[in-house]
Amino acid sequence: MDDQNERIRKRAHEIWEEEGRPEGREYTHWLRARADIYAEDGEKSKRPENPLDLLGLSLGRIQPA
Image 1: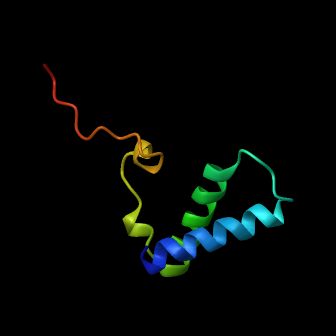
Image 2: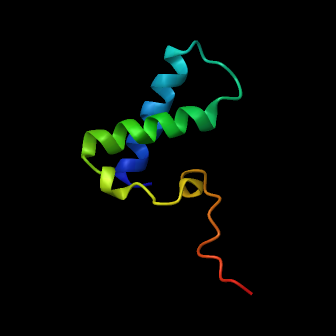
Image 3: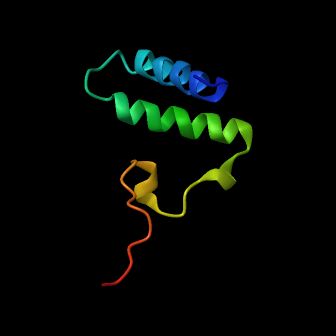
C-alpha cells in the first residue's frame, strides 16, 4: 500500500472513532478521509471530472451506437 493510501486509511479510522465507531459508514469515512488527504497534499487537480469516478462507478466514455 502506498503512503497516500495508508494516510487515507488512518484518517478514515480517526473519523470512525470521532463519530463513535458507527457500523456501515466505512465508505463515507473513506471518502471524507480521501478528501482531507488530497486537500493536505494540494491535489485538488486530481479530482475526477466525472462524479461517478469518486464512487468507482465510471465506465469510461460511452460511445453512441
